[in-house]
Image (cartoon, rainbow, N blue to C red; front, side):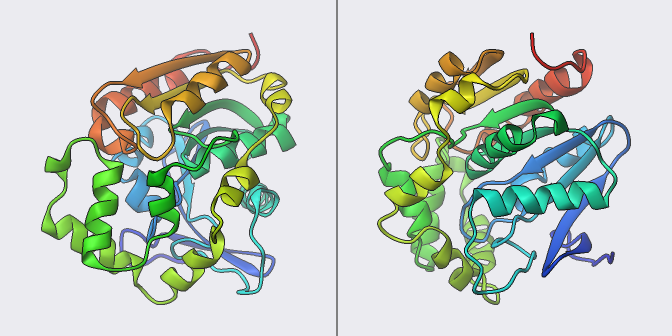
Length: 282
């Protein structure tokens, strides 16, 4: 394991033919953070506003998922939910972590659900934020995310899709995320993940409704009412399907809940994952 001065590069661990870049901060019960699938995304870019607070009271594990950020796997690999879940299991095994609560953002929410389906005994609680994981018609916003072609203008338009409050978007932020999306082989890897027709990507990440009905975990759904990427209706369906689910909806908020409602979002996580009794089921 190694460290680097860049905040996005933390620890490195070899998992079979792959190398995972992951953050590991704090002590106590483990919380696994799974980022979304935006261009140039890393675990740190997605969760930098959450990790410092959570890690004061828990052990926080936040990897760059295979195909994203500074994690590496063979270029000819076909990445799918099973592969992503197995890589996370291998990481947790290597770190000797038998059980985690999982927070999944968008794409990460779908992987959190796939993980809970595959290994229910390894999961304490679930938080699904603007999560994919059910079939729904591809939105224009998600098509823009997965179909991104690098330019400053395209990145600005994409960030305007993510955020309800466009005052958050400035030239420096646009340039920073644009540069992240064009670093090394990031764009070539990203283009392979969700090729057209992109409805196939939605279906790849979707679980059957019966899989959600079978979940035994206490689950918190969080969604921005004005999300243009993953419709609020997806979380509303999950609320009806998952037996032990509750939901919090932020008005005047888009797909960037952890940024647009950073303090309130983190308070929800602390209350649900740390301060409430650590149980599964009802």
